[in-house]
Length: 525
Ligand SMILES: *[C@@H]1O[C@H](CO)[C@@H](O)[C@H](O)[C@H]1NC(C)=O
Ligand SMILES: *[C@@H]1O[C@H](CO)[C@@H](O)[C@H](O)[C@H]1NC(C)=O
Ligand SMILES: *[C@@H]1O[C@H](CO)[C@@H](O)[C@H](O)[C@H]1NC(C)=O
Ligand SMILES: *[C@@H]1O[C@H](CO)[C@@H](O)[C@H](O)[C@H]1NC(C)=O
Ligand SMILES: *[C@@H]1O[C@H](CO)[C@@H](O)[C@H](O)[C@H]1NC(C)=O
Ligand SMILES: *[C@@H]1O[C@H](CO)[C@@H](O)[C@H](O)[C@H]1NC(C)=O
Ligand SMILES: *[C@@H]1O[C@H](CO)[C@@H](O)[C@H](O)[C@H]1NC(C)=O
Image 1 (tube, rainbow, N blue to C red):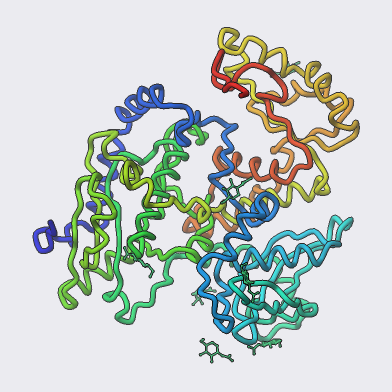
Image 2 (cartoon, protein in one colour):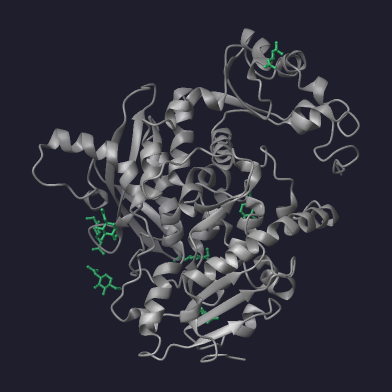
């Protein structure tokens, strides 16, 4: 099976990969057609074949610490108990996401009079059973001031349960504090730190985490190459990405990752697919790096070419997705490369995880978080509404015009109907954040008589040329400005609705019409 020697990776450097990608790109036109036909025949429960609209908000795709804390206590408790071998004196791994969640929960439980804005990563504290973690917060009721704290957490690991037994004083967690620059007075330094922190934290996160002192050649790697996944929907991308990540985890191999992704046309202002977007615009690479072993593709191939001959590194090429990860478990070669062909849909990455593999590989959705820059914008928006608001999803657009499939939608989402529906469910005077695909927002003006309405574009200053986000993205993008695209907008709004007190959805809450057209509602039984 192994084709070591025949296949020459130096021929498959960046150029060849780019070629494969271009080839895929030209095939995309055909691919999209096939995909549409396929999608029509798939069962609607399949998570990736939900229609990819502005309203898509599959919560399972994203989890932030806050969501996790709010929504699933039992999952934590299970998580806390997992992987324990019962020894009381084992050092606590502060970098473990489960420990991170535990610390967040402890902090939220303890400091009830502040609003948390963001938690930094937890790091090792003063000894084996102590962690330090930083956060930004503002006192409840104070809309302007931000402050930062970092504290020491004392933990015990007892009978397979890790718990927090003590939290230190204000600023006791010095290891979680950013290293100070020299030669500036403390006030200036603190100020500059707060301002630049966001930028630094998200931009210094290339995948250069692997030491290059010979450990490269001892590593085991997995890379996916080619395939028809590019420029499909973002759900498709994530579905495939999670399969690949799941396989790498299963095989205990470092995943060699291409950070450039393609944004499908429904999210772009040009109306064209836009290739070459950066993964880090959308997703939290820091968190992913903390939970999985990753290496950037460019760096990987450069190391590989340098060391392959000297260290006799070998390659195992797999060209059939039906070769299961289980069959690859005993492969000793340094690199397993899965190469995908040009015939869709047989060349989708996620197909690796189908069939018997589905029961063996878990797709690690919990590792893929929204990027911090997007979460920060959502927090800023929530903050401007005093963390006290309700959201309403109002889906109109083409569905509202199609009376055959959605006979009542247009009427049920008119401002008059909305006011009637919200009567008694939402107090007058509240902040109401409206998520909608209705481009003319004055359409909703009648709601202003009773509620304080908000739309995303009201918060434009968060991404304009003077914003932190703008500077941060520009830095990530080699100095070129980045526009806030449709997928980012959706991610932000999705996150804003997670912070709402009450949520109203178009289907179910506002209309009895079915989401996917007439007679498609799932039966209530
Ligand atoms: C909580 O987590 C468990 C285990 O991961 C899962 O089975 C359950 O569906 C989750 N519940 C909610 C409400 O998300
Ligand atoms: C670690 O430090 C904490 C706080 O000073 C202390 O309570 C704990 O006993 C120490 N643990 C060990 C194993 O030294
Ligand atoms: C911390 O844990 C390591 C590994 O178990 C152990 O070798 C070391 O002695 C511990 N240090 C302290 C101060 O307990
Ligand atoms: C440890 O946990 C198990 C299961 O929860 C319980 O039966 C046992 O009594 C516990 N032991 C101690 C020493 O707490
Ligand atoms: C970025 O991170 C690396 C590795 O963690 C570190 O060595 C480097 O100093 C950081 N660069 C900046 C500008 O902070
Ligand atoms: C991966 O590592 C885990 C833990 O070390 C081990 O149990 C498992 O068998 C390994 N899997 C493979 C495919 O080598
Ligand atoms: C927007 O909606 C309002 C109220 O329905 C209407 O008066 C106005 O003409 C619309 N504007 C555009 C540009 O369609």
